[in-house]
Image (cartoon, rainbow, N blue to C red):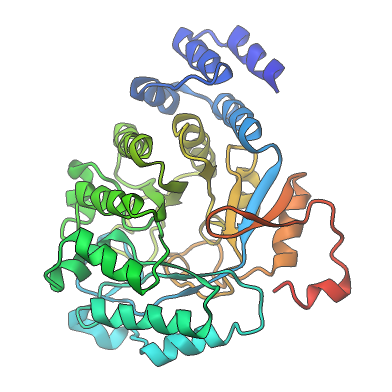
Length: 388
């Protein structure tokens, strides 16, 4: 692979791109300006080669997934983000759904006897689903299944929850951690830069507030993920600004597990006039993120959003994680017109997907501790019953 990079350096007439390639070879950090240059002038082949070099240096051929399921308590929301196809305003809540604690516990109980390791809980910001409500939910989940990792609530949900409870973010996070919250998902980040955020999500927590909540969680010993919504009205400099803020916080706390670029989907929302990014631009986004975010251990492609084949393709552009089994339990992207309208894959299907592109499938837990290495295992018929 290093020979490929050397050829890139020798055959690229752009001196700045040569410098960037050499930095990647030498494991040196690229600057914000150099990241912008990759977006503006780096070909797919160029950034793909650098990203794959970095991915294989960090992880070899290992590709991670986990056995998880999602609970979406409600799609009723007090906010009105223009890109969202999922939520229904509280004023029109008859168009949405609201799950009770018992209904959500029934979802958890539906996985009794199955080897899932994580429940992922995110949804709309419902004014009646307050901090006390979710504390009770988390406690009851742990009482029923103590070993299940609870990853829950975007910073948007948390900010509203804490303000409504008249608690500081530190106080609110402590309440949830004491109840059993173990890590945070990366949603709600969208684009941090106020120039764009004010146009697409003006009424919810701003970029600084999102980062502060994650920093507080990290300081409490909790890990989290980070996302970025790309491919809408933002410019390359806004992407760089977003990733720069994440990289700076990661330098400080080392609390992020993974970065997840999220492709904007334009169905059934107020931005349907905005064309979606091409698959070429999607792969460039993943590749440049892998090159720039040198302190993020993992880069994830969310397969229900990209589709199975494109998720496979991303594994050649810096990605080393394709999320989990999910089990048709999320509607956030299917309602926006994603490739996967019924997002579920069994463990056997995920393993096969990864092996088809000559990568090594590794089952992980939420914190990336390895559970099973399927790279040398044959999935026999008798194994498949437990791999769902």
